[in-house]
Image 1 (tube, rainbow, N blue to C red):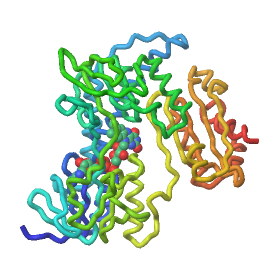
Image 2 (cartoon, rainbow, N blue to C red):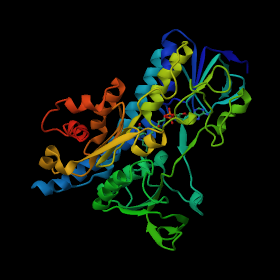
Image 3 (cartoon, helix red, strand yellow):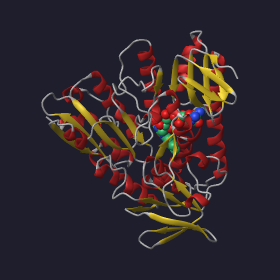
Image 4 (tube, helix red, strand yellow):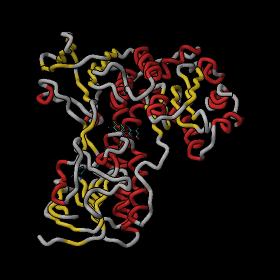
Length: 449
Ligand SMILES: Cc1cc2nc3c(=O)[nH]c(=O)nc-3n(C[C@H](O)[C@H](O)[C@H](O)COP(=O)(O)OP(=O)(O)OC[C@H]3O[C@@H](n4cnc5c(N)ncnc54)[C@H](O)[C@@H]3O)c2cc1C
């Protein structure tokens, strides 16, 4: 097959690849985009979109149960088929939207797994294309932990979970990270008996220990059997599935969900053929400007080892585009924020105390408990706290950890202050609306006065 020359090749229809392909095509460039599975990548098909649609049902059930504490008694009937039908409709709509965006812009989409066959030259489905600019946005896949017998069993991952029509009666979730906690709590709230196994000594070790403890307690109160510091050694099939733990205990379960980290999708690319180097963990090596070791080849998102969030991969696209156009944006010139969508949520922005101290900053740290909060009291949503980390000398806000109701929304106020370069004193003198959860933020800053 002759090699076809185009202006841009994108590998992976994820969060960064799609908008770059669309921008180039709209500017009249010839663009080929390879995608091996589904347009829209992880977020739209098997990540954020279906998981948050699923959690919308689960958290409504949780809130309806909690309403009894303020005198509203609800009878809850869970229609799992309706829930999963809705989840699937939403992700199909979003997937179709991506398809329309690409075809509307004139991007040539090739459904197939692409691999390098030469410098900036890729092949899939009998099509070989070459371009001066190549963008790798191939993301990651769920990792399979080394547990005896696991690979022979039909375990679930985020790739298959949302295809379920019915939810299992019981499930063991392997992995107490963001995905395991969100889906674990969601399942429990929809009537499944959930056990979560986490091998580490605590959940999400990158977060403050007391923050993760609030989330852990909320899950336990929902009925989740949370086993921290516990490792599965083998799994087997009897009448049910059996998970044996290293401490000798056994768990009988109807299903297993593996949420134990991610592996970058780099192997199939055969990067060496184009001089694109991988690091020791198989992430594509990029410099600060997101350039790989091959001129003209860029990488972004999870395959490049960037923080594993949709808004990061999307923002990466704007960086790559600016660099291609001669700009100087870098891979991390942003204030990073994210949230876990458990209930309560954990909203994080910037550095926590441990990270700031590790970077040699002299810090002041204050914490405001939601049990003292007006809105929290009125709504019986007093679980959690807000914590602010500031630079002791410049008074700049370095970061915040918010645990509480919709903390993933509220944290944006701090994000905006950080982007604007304001100090904690600006936050302190801001008069927020009473009574709102946001009102707790100036109260938090006031603890520094
Ligand atoms: C259950 C779950 C929930 C999540 N929830 C959130 C959330 O609430 N908020 C948030 O910010 N993030 C969330 N994330 C993370 C987020 O989904 C990812 O960080 C984001 O989708 C990564 O985008 P990406 O562009 O790097 O890659 P992806 O979106 O994974 O896209 C990569 C694409 O490349 C394709 N591909 C791979 N190799 C090849 C090849 N050789 N040839 C052709 N195509 C290839 C893949 O099929 C895929 O479609 C969640 C993740 C999971 C698993």
